[in-house]
Each structure stands twice: as structure tokens, then as C-alpha cells.
Image (cartoon, rainbow, N blue to C red; front, top):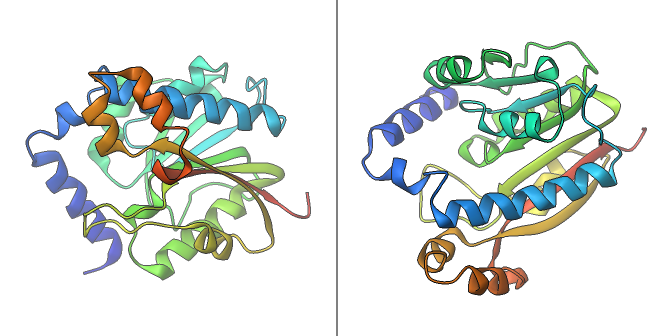
Length: 231
């Protein structure tokens, strides 16, 4: 089975499974905790790399799903007309268009982006790469993200480095991220309290989650800014 077909099947099956909707409920205390912590870290990186204000910046999310992250960027001050997203699943793209018709969402693959060279100020991916198991597809997707990035632009990467008990995904550590983006500068920060732990504790004690989240070995994701060295 081709890798992209496998990914489509995995997500179709995930959408059919019971209980996942509740797990990813945006008003669930654990999800609020994790998202808000990540937003603070993302905001710090955006400021650090001179991407604020976002108004005129052209942004692409690879593996955008229904556009939830892009909608957050509208809240950060980005103009909807400058926000683009691409996802492999037509159902996600159609749902995103219904919710946010002012965003530019298209159906397509990360390894063949339908955009010009050096077109985006910011290219981002949030837990998309770990869904790709094939090394060649991972490399091609990384090359495409670099191709469409402006020389002074930034890739924003958020993905897990600890592999959950899930055969449909594969963790990515810093060594592999560096190999995927050779010759680039990486600014990596370990973030996100382990979600299984957060789900157990968030309803009981937000403070306990915040405290445990300060421990590096309990942070399961890397947030990375990736920039071209020739910028």
C-alpha cells in the first residue's frame, strides 16, 4: 500500500472510532491546558523571529486538518486572506471551508505542495510528520516545505519525540529533524506535558499540571523554529 493511501485509511478509521471526539473536545480541561501552553510557546517563537505583527505575513500549514490552527492565527492578528492550508483528507478540507470560507484550504499532499518557490513567510506543521512512516515521503515533504519558504522565512514545527503506543505513528527526535532540514538553523524547545498524564490530572488540579510541565522529561513534544542558514 502506498504511504499516502495508508495515512488516509488510518485517519478514516480514527474518525469512525468512538471516544475520540470527547478526547479532543476543545473545552476539555486537559486540551485547554495543552493548547494554551503551546500557544504561549508559539507566541514567544513568533516574536523571537520577527514574525509579529502577522498581518502581512503569508502563512502555510501543511496537514491543516479542518483549519483549527490557522483560525488561531487569525486571533493572533494574521489576515485570513494570507492563511493557507493543505490536507490529505477531502472531508477535513470541506469541513474547514464550511467553518472558515475566508481561509485558503486545499486538498493535497505534503510531498507535492501546489505553491510557488519562496512564497511563504511562515510554514508550519503540527503533528503531521509523525503520521508519515515512510522515510522517503518524510524527506520529500521536508524538501517541499523548504522550497516554498522565503529565504528569510521560518518553519514552525510541533511534533512528539516520545512514541506513544500507536503503530500508526512514529516519533521524531531532534537528530531526525536536523537530517530532514540539512544546512538549517534549529531553535528547539521541549514543550507539552505528556497528554495521558494531563488528561488524568487536569480536572483535579491545573496547578499540578503546570508544576509537572516544568519537568523536561515529562514534556513529550518539540516546538522548533527552522530557518535557512543563507538567510
